Figure 1 (cartoon, rainbow, N blue to C red):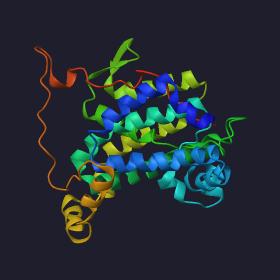
Figure 2 (figure 1 turned 90 degrees about the horizontal axis):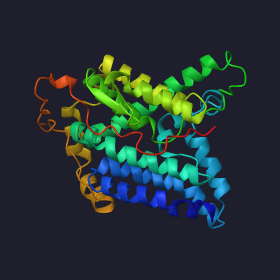
Figure 3 (figure 1 turned 90 degrees about the vertical axis):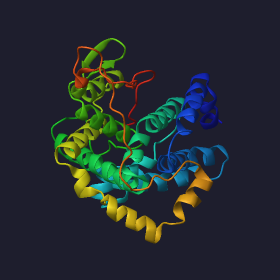
Figure 4 (figure 1 turned 30 degrees about the vertical axis):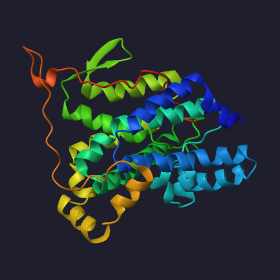
Length: 302
């Protein structure tokens, strides 16, 4: 059972323990996202291991979730624009490790957005970020396809949770552009350039340009520069009204199934600003918690 034993390697078990600790602190929206990801991505390998038609379910899920030029533009299938975050193809141990890494990054970076936006607005934010980064990805593939021989741009796909924490990281760095962030434990870079440095290192490690990472970074910059939160997300007042009228039972139902709490769409909680070191401006301080390269790099399947 290669798909099942892939998760039993020591490195995978260590990541699993760290992931469970991260998830214990997540609100219900992030738990819902990770649960859907586990079901959609892990379902086909599990069914294949049990001999229950895993290949058929895999093909159907790929039609729904793989965001590539052929699947979206040529087949006019719009569902992958919003559903791609829920699915990562898993065929071996390296894919399983990549899936665990995506889950850990999601649990580490996204709960802060849910706590600030409220769960309902956060779910809208997830849809906006997934759709926006995928639109940029498809545009890049259409532009580079005729210009780079052997690129197979029509078949390159964006899938998995990875773009979401990359967008989150980009927004964090843009909020504090003059702070410093450590890359690979070797060099400090200005935080505004840190996401691009991540993309370059991942591309070198994988031997190919990581277009989905660049697309996520680009959308993060657009989201910040154009204040897309005001355009793409419901206002706090509208979200609160929807919660009161139509979703009164949702927090209790989701909480009983997934655990965690529903964050209301009220004003964001007050956060104590970080204390700057003596003699430095607050925005010159090192950003804390940037540990994207504490382990394996992200691999984009072709």
